[in-house]
Length: 391
Image 1 (cartoon, one colour):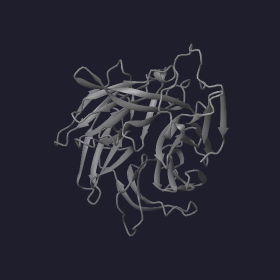
Image 2 (tube, rainbow, N blue to C red):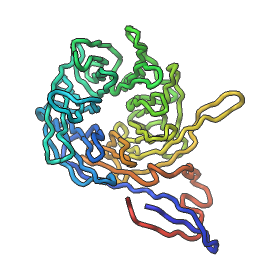
Image 3 (cartoon, rainbow, N blue to C red):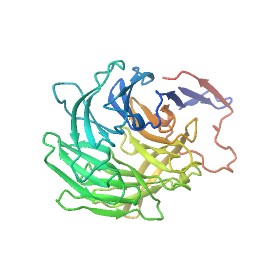
Image 4 (cartoon, one colour):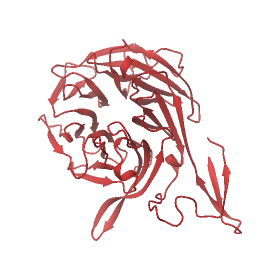
């Protein structure tokens, strides 16, 4: 959708991208969790409270056209984490997916059974989690290994996909949620939410180290994601009062650059997850009311630039914008970038949100953050023409 702007009497103007935010109801469940783009036209979503997958069909423009729900193994499995498998498995040549079952203490290899949402996914393989770890949450595949964050027992686990007996188990502080492999150094990182630390493993056979989040930056690292810029990024959720709008970039040497949103909405936002597109300097942060009931559910568009100061280049937030979600207090949970759109799960309401337009491929200037500015947040022109075509 494009919004055309013109200056009175000038006859010429420029086109500004508008935003589109649409909520889609999913089959009902107590909790809707992870989301994964399996193919161009298929999303897979987990619903933990009844151990179910939801297959969501997308048209060629990325618009959801339907969803179907299937039980993975049993309603009490605690189905949760998702990750693409880089190859095929079992007796199938199709794309398969790794899924954690937190309450059954295992990892499933799932064949989604194509893009047809009426075709039931099937379990290809079940791999138990090695003791003493239990309660697998997040899962990641890397170089033939699975890395798993065991939230319930506070362990990080690695095992070889083809030989699960080749495994390592690390005890960490509470509680690991995600595991990320640094794209440049190859080091392993996990956000430990209740202890407000980041676990760092150098692939040296040791126990790893835990780095405390500076209290002035915030608490509760959740989203820990490898970015296309060659670094790992982490988002801070905060506490029951508020967030701090803070996220960090973990560099090759494991140093962390911290960034804080400065708008009135962003500066107190609890950040739970993030997603990246093709531009390594630009990404999206997900604000959530998960731990703070009165906090906002929103998407924040962010662009990072290295700003030269004297002889050194210091990274800074060059662009920041807020996209408020239509319905609040829904515990936004995870976010994925796919087909030039953002897809977001809302944990407590069985809802999928699609965001496209300016939130994804526009807004290259920061929003007006001064509430006393003469022009507010409108467009500084005398006339506006609207084109309501949404792609």
